[in-house]
Image (tube, rainbow, N blue to C red; front, side):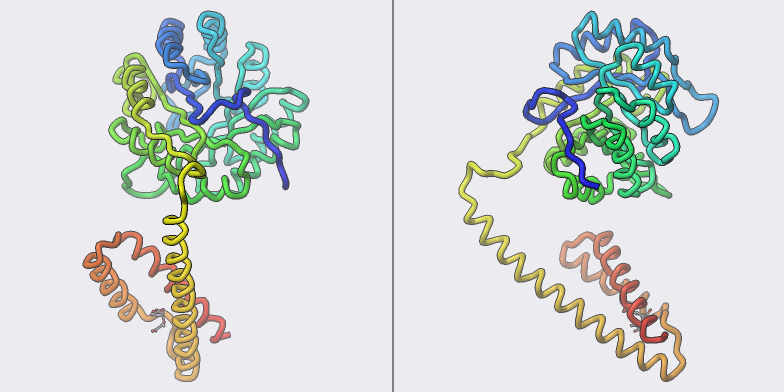
Length: 355
Ligand SMILES: C=C(O[C@@H]1C=C(C(=O)O)C=C[C@H]1O)C(=O)O
């Protein structure tokens, strides 16, 4: 579906747009105190969670609609615009009643088309910006689907929030960034603003800045970070929150590079890109040759009644490629992924022959 988005932040300010505030609204004093500190940093939007979807019951699940009154006071006292998460029609109605400026739909809601549709229906005819976090699973179509539901309800001031994706097993991140997904979203919808939620990707303080910088280098439009006056004592997500002071430093340390680089002579870049084009052509030719060999092997296996998967041979290839990758200084993880993908495609070609 073709969509034309408007800037949810109103003014066409230069990127990055900055959204900050506590994970959860805890007390009126806490919400107002953090807001006053962030006001001096010229942030674009103040965030605080009121209804908190938690992994397990028994954790702090938010102060509820009472917190919306505190956010209204933030607006009155600081002039900041405010945003909170909504997960259903009741939340939407409460937010509209309390003059919340911007809504966001959380990752655990974006996964459910019924919930997103319920929110979209409640917003029909309302002019309010909405930000849509990625679904917890790495499903770009579901993310776009959520955005489409809102767009069909007449919401055009939409931004996407990239908060990373759940993955099984130990990783460096709380939610893997899987950058290729937001990159593809931007490719399909160049005028859709994408905000990086580094807090939920990292889950810990020490790598927040690195992830924010990667996001800026990938042309993300803004940052959403959880900021708390006493992070260690936060009632939710303590490990990933930082003080307003640390956050101010993080933002001022960000290097914002030009998207197009129009102000510099690009002839050197063009030369390097033409060399990459030559290598890409070569890569494609090599892959094509390799698949043709796999097909010949498929014909042989069919004639001699040999199964497609050959674990010993496959193990040897993986081990050899890992060693070579290490010697060349290439990432073993990358080479592994590449070869697994090539192996799967080789199996697909042989299956076609077997049919
Ligand atoms: C091509 C073969 O079939 C499969 C595919 C492989 C590959 O693409 O390298 C390796 C082992 C097999 O699992 C083969 O048996 O050599």
